Image (cartoon, rainbow, N blue to C red; front, side, top):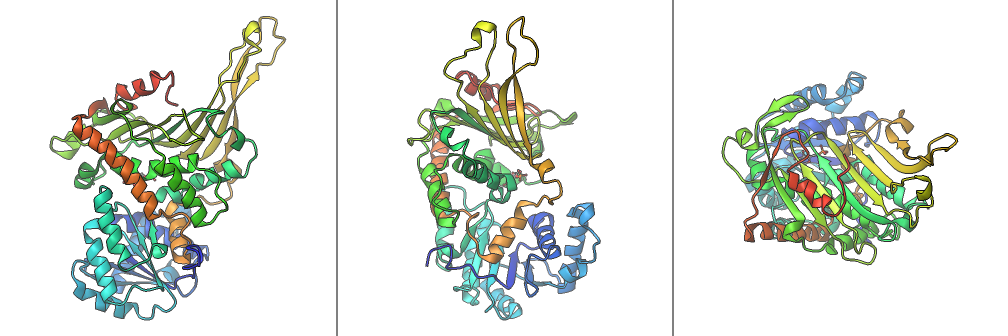
Length: 487
Ligand code: BG6
């Protein structure tokens, strides 16, 4: 059987590790509630939470009710389905570092012959012990699949250790590595845009495209994750996963069809074609004090409470060495405490070969396609048009957006958060939007080489004022190619 059909039965049990943590409260429980409310999960699906805290079933239901009241949007509350959702929940206290407790967990879980989906969002240091515990208690095998939340290691070697440990109990087909960006609607829409429309694909290569920009900017700072973030930095927190997945979906060849194997085969080819980055093609930054959205904020080191050279910003000029993309730079940038929150992909097309309006004063800008993922969702194509008039003083051409606002076009459709999609796919056994091991390894391979270059050349962070778009060197990175970041 192919990896797409081998494990596609729907599970009737869901086991959440890290069930009292921040992700569970903010994302997982609200997502599961939304799926329940919309009748998208089977009547018999039971959800069991597990974590270190000592809680009864009712205690966990109370925790879940509180999380829902805090994190569900107002219009989703109090519609009569809360109790039936809470009735699905149960809880088992567990110290995942000890194999002993897993037996009791399995006992309480009961019959898993209807299939079990596990979601692991605990510290990676617990992964190996957790897998061993699951195995010893019979919570592995072909009826079980496992979802793994990042971070899965912090370089190729450590991610390999985790992946090997997982592989001792679960086949690749049963392993669902989560990158929550793949659950975002506009990210999936990128494939529809590229492969359901005739007009883009013939130009989607080095003949038609001058360069691509991918930005994920955030206004938030450390958000209480001091140790994790300081050990990780922007390159590993954002580029290694989310940004490279966006790059892969933007750059991949048309897949043979929509199944998981075909799509992931195409993505991994792109990731393996990434050229090692030269020292002068990247910028590391760290926020100093400044003002974000009108509010004064501390520097990174003040937020952290110690000195540090961890980057909170990174900009990279990436190249994909294949036929389609020869000579087309992909500029990537991401950072904390930037000017605004924005995730977008910008496709800058080439200029027309000859400007017939030049003699009449008409100036042309090349077409640009902006795919905005958040906070708004839209696809906007900048096209040149003539300003209305009798043109006695020459032809005035202007850039006008051809706008497809997804928020407006689908105003009646509820906007779903990424985890709704990913949890449902995990329960249903569809691996398409999860990251395969070879993709993760290609991502780490490229990112590790960047970190080695930084270390070998002692590349330090450049400070930028919070509320700006990163260090001035990030602007110079594109300006020296005659390119401006889309702002
Ligand atoms: C996470 C990172 O993976 O993605 C965070 O660890 C970051 O540092 C977050 O804030 C951004 O996700 P989103 O969906 O808000 O863009």
